Amino acid sequence: MALPRVDKRNSKRKCFWCIKAVKWIPVLFIVTIIVWSYYAYVVQLCIVTVESTVNQIIYLIIYHITLIMFCWAYWKTIFTDIGKVPDKFHLPDSEYERLMHAENEEMQRHILETFSRELPNTNCTINGTVRYCEECRNIKPDRAHHCSVCGECVLKMDHHCPWVNNCVCFTNYKFFILFLAYSLIYCIYVSLTSLQYFIAFWKGDLEGMGKFHILFLFFVALMFAVSLVSLFGYHCYLVIYNRTTLEAFRPAIFRTGPDKNGFGLGVYNNFLEVFGNDSKKWFLPVSSSLGDGVTYPVQSQHQPRFYHSMDSTQNSLGDGYTFPQRHMDEDAEHLLIDSRHLDEETFSVP
Image (cartoon, rainbow, N blue to C red; front, side, top):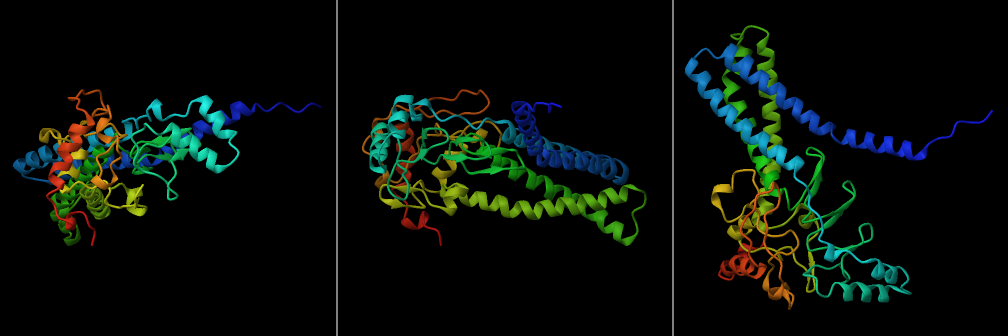
């Protein structure tokens, strides 16, 4: 009797979609917590438990403002595209064939260096060679790394976060910071406003089934707040020193060697690079970061000779908003001018 044929392509397709579905589990968990906390806070705490109408109104107004900002930032972090490495960094078929048929590593190195000669790169490998991704056939732009989960090179990759099912990178790093900030504010606010009712529960003054929702609401909010304090504080530290999580563990390597402060331009300028020049947009989850995700102002000793002749522009990426375009040398001059007057202590880590 003939055995039934197994369609390997169909099997792989099913496996692919199963893996994609599993990746959304952490996000669904967070969404479930948000939905339950909304019911517990709005219905069980504010409507059922809080007796003062004035307090109810104040609690609900502040709560909904915080919740909207929290969910908005979370949405943007999840669904903002990670961007694409420009085609000029992609090795053409002809160059790729030459690379594959090169007789030794020295020839491969020469091919890559020749191709990347006009690219705006300042970073290299520990051996001083061009950073090349074999998976994507890309010369890696500065601060870009290949994400094994996303399966592609990611611009200014910070890390891949399962809680947002996305890479945290150049295009959504501002949104990620705001997500941490607003989620922390949300948890602290819920904890503080439910504290007196949590105490009343232990004293036996709180009656009804809703008391259990309030009890767990306080514990969950407090638990997440404690976790978020350290994570948000760490990323504030990274913003201040203009580093990614990957660069904090392994400093970027320039032609002059590893330098953990190579992209540091001073606290204020580092902040502007992530949040932009328009202060009205700093705390809103809208695109305002400086740069194109490929080229970054660096300390003067790391600037390549062709840095100021580049024709790249500073675009804000993300949700379709168009911001004024400027030549990179204009932004570099703006960001670097203040850093010249800062002491070395500004950039050093204790």
